[in-house]
Amino acid sequence: MNTADSARRYSVGAMIFHWVIAVAVIVNWRLAENAHHAQSGAESAAIFANHKALGILILVLTVGRLLWRWTHPVPPLPSDLAQWEKTLARAVHVIFYVLLIALPLGGWIANSLAGREIDMFGLFTIPPLPVGDNPDAAKSIFSIHATGGSIFIYLIALHILGALKHTFFDKNGGIFRMLPFGKA
Image 1: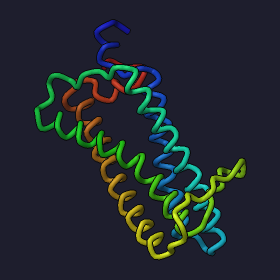
Image 2: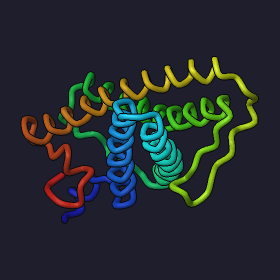
Image 3: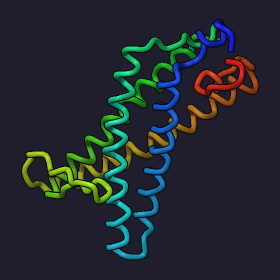
C-alpha cells in the first residue's frame, strides 16, 4: 500500500472498532426483533438478556473507539465529494456516536427504573443505576429506545448506500477507506 493510499485510509484500530461495533449493532437489532417475536415471555426475556449485555458491550467499545479517534487522526473525506455529501457524512457520523452512547445508556437507565440488573452473558451482573423505581418512566424510555434503534437502522442503511455509491459509482474508493485492502 502506498503512502497516499494510507493517508486516505482509516487506521487498523479504527477499522477493527468500526467493524466489530457494526456487527454488534446489527446482531443486537436482530436480537431485539427476535425477542419481540418470541413464542413465550421466558424466551423473550432470555433473548432480551443477550440484547442488554451486547448493548453494554457496544457502549464500552464505543467509548474505546472515541478514545482511539481522539488519539489517531482520521483521513480527510474524498476531495470529489459535494459539500452536501460532506455535511451529510459528518452529520450521520455524529448521530451514530450519539446513538451508540445514548441507546445503551437509555436501555440501562430504563432497566434501572424497572429495578432490573443487567446480566453480562452469565459472567457478572451490572446493578441498576441509583435512579429509584419508576415503571412508567422505564416504559417511556424503552419506547424512546426502540424508536432510536429504528432510526439507527435507517441511518445504517443510508451509510451503506453512501459507501457503495462512492465505491462503485464515484469510484473514489469509499468503502476501502475502512478496509485493509483495495484502493482507497
